[in-house]
Image 1 (cartoon, rainbow, N blue to C red):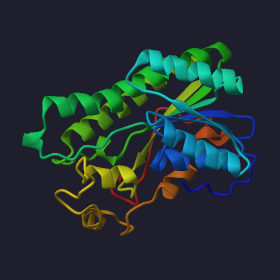
Image 2: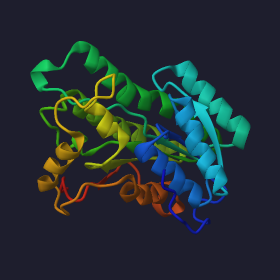
Image 3: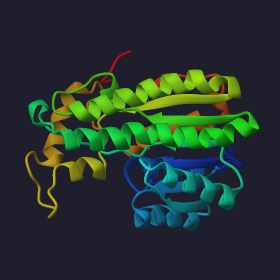
Length: 267
């Protein structure tokens, strides 16, 4: 995990929950938020990974706690919110970042694969937003940020289930922005492009860890032709936008999707 050196002021006094923060983009979000002064709940289904990120933040002088959560289970989500409120006394920002990535030819996508991707990527956003919004409503403010992906706008034939799930996240971003605006809650999305993370590498490996199909490094390189800036992104490229959406600077922005993709999708 890379924690950018921030001013330590932009998010001082804020409390953020980041789901799927045990590695990749989520870990970068958590580190960047902490570097700007936020207390960060590192939430992940992998409790050990969450603890590792939280410990790194603490070693660097930040405030953090680890929470194991299954975002597809309402009881688990409620327990996460209770743990954060008990540990930090408040929640100001929710990052719905937990997700699974599936690459499968369109005609080979199975019902089991479809349900898994849709439950984690879609249902997880709904449940987390609902449960955290109940707290936001009591105080009349709050921010929700959803990881949408360029696939929500420009789907690929080999990522049909994933693209459909991210389109549902974008739709939830719009509907929840409308539903929650009367309570002073903003809801926005970040659309990362092709980002080099463990999630991408794991997608190309079987249970033994052996590479199957395309080599992940080669596969990443193949996508650069579609990127105007001609390079694959890193989690650090996305994290500054997360800080912006968590800060007061974004108070008059809601229902929007901000692409951080090097120029894949032009809006």
